[in-house]
Length: 176
Image 1 (cartoon, rainbow, N blue to C red):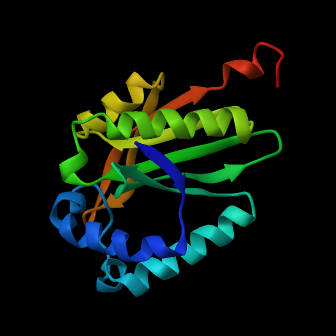
Image 2: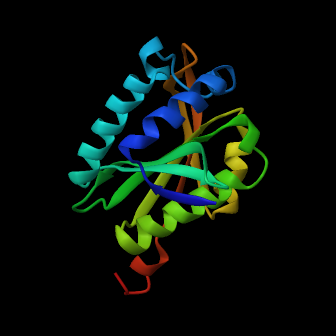
């Protein structure tokens, strides 16, 4: 399993995976317009993500298993200054679920966030009923810190989320 920075040539495999998993992902995602599921739509998203990456406020990654693109993982909303924080978000294809793919991807992006980006904190939010994603975060040392009512509009409805965070231990050991 590999995570790497998104590339423009990922647009076609991303569109293919998103089309194949449209129903599966709809329960965890906002309602998407038709363009989102096209190669051109994914090309635009990748271009925007890489622009934010070059500005240091976003880390957009592809998740590959056995060389096949099976999902995305990002560190979004990277804020420097006194916060030094970012938020992780991810999804995997239904066929990759339950195989440790998301757990390994989160572990890798947290390592990058702490060692390379030198973030103090990484946050994540899951739907209240998304127990599998909560387990992924807990396996990676995230702690529950609260509940956000009507936090995000998912599948057409404002839904509550469980909030998680993981702090960088190096910040408290005097190494950062």
